[in-house]
Length: 266
Length: 306
Image (cartoon, rainbow over the protein chains, first blue to last red):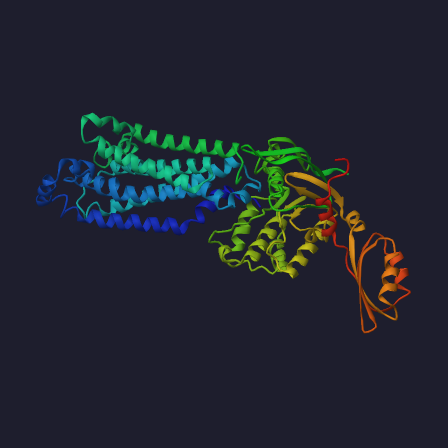
């Protein structure tokens, strides 16, 4: 029986519950934050409150931009809760894709069949990619739906660019997790590396924005590459988008090479 | 006859720990070959080398005439593999899981999966992670047999199976052999292998200690004899049996004018039968030869010439 991309299909279809749960979480985050914009971000009272906060804090949280609709969506949804949820989902899937499967002993049986190791890694990476893109696309659709009622005024082309970066940023953590899991054969190593990429990216951005002395940290922050120019407000930096997706692809290739060269389950 | 599997000077090191020290063996096509040995002897490592799950440090392996690594997916489609430890954790039914493995193995005849499942008494509609160990093992067996591969590599295939299902498995192995398939299986006890295997290799500490045909082992094997008889004294009974060639470890008990005697027999039965004809037997048990015992003897005695 011939089926195209059998491993991709299994990796994608067998995790539908998890995909659905993360989709629900992201939808909840979107519906929670965005409708509040008229009463929070846009209100003068709130602006006074934010002005009263320490400047370091508003910078760290990206709250310096929440006075506009696109800036509000950027800071709250894309920059904070959405980023967090997407990163966790992506890292979890990435770490499970190869390292987790090997650790649980199931990869051995898959590899004993008529598949190549490179194929296993690539098809599972493709499934990770598709799930991340689907979640980002869902958020795109929901933001478009809420744009009017929440008086956000986000330009669709900017939102599209931001979505590409939103997905690319989460995918980078996910592919880092996949790669570390594939190299080590351990799920926890994948989780650790994936989480480190996400968290350090966020921290380097938050710290790097504090003063010129530590500005160099921004260069090390994928989060800053993606969101440094507030893409929801100003449109995507396509070089950054290419970079994020390109590194992800390179990490997947590295994972494929690593798994192809070593003993499995030893 | 061509070899379905051959290994020459197969060694495998994990870091500095060498687990296979130059393993040599050959499995004839169409035969049932059993590898036995204690846990940690290297059975699983050897099997994983055949499927290119791990790669030998040195030595040469040929599976169905090809190098496992070079043979790649095409070669593995011609093999059915049951891993020693089977983990099936997905939230999918057995049927769906098998459909997946079907998609990545050789072609499966329609109805084959259902037939195998029914034979082994496996419910295909239950979620795999809710299955008991035995039922998971059945699922693993279906997965290995379903595409009627030229070669079956089965690591401890009967572990977790109840005796009836074990019998069914033995029947499946014999049928496969009739169809011309080659079966390479392992166990830590000989009794599981001796029913089906033509040849057994004894693997210990990463070395093949002996390769013997099962019939050869049977000839050299020890049988246990137990009898009770009347009208004879313990002394005479002991002397009579003790004089039979191959009989050893004679122990006799006498009570209520009945003599109870136990002994072991190595080799030919005929002389024993002649001697027994002179007794007034009340009861007689001559057990199946215990191959386990003859193998243990092999384990403990150093090889000739060493």
